[in-house]
Length: 67
Image 1 (tube, rainbow, N blue to C red):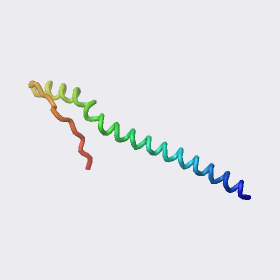
Image 2: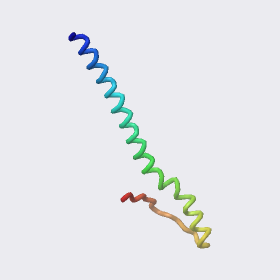
Image 3: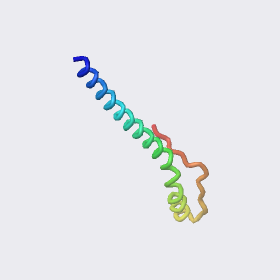
Image 4: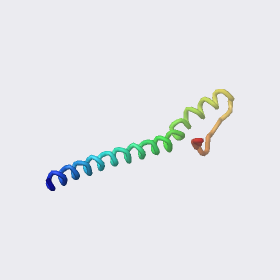
């Protein structure tokens, strides 16, 4: 009885560790995307604004504000 309970406890701990690791990886991925997204759109945004205004538009500090 004790071995069976211990075996189930270890399985639950392993599953919990996997779930925790996957959730942590997802959080890191979301944070990375939120941090990289403004930098990725900076070039195309500058090009479109420059084309529309006929001026040399430069974005010095791209930030993404979430409300």
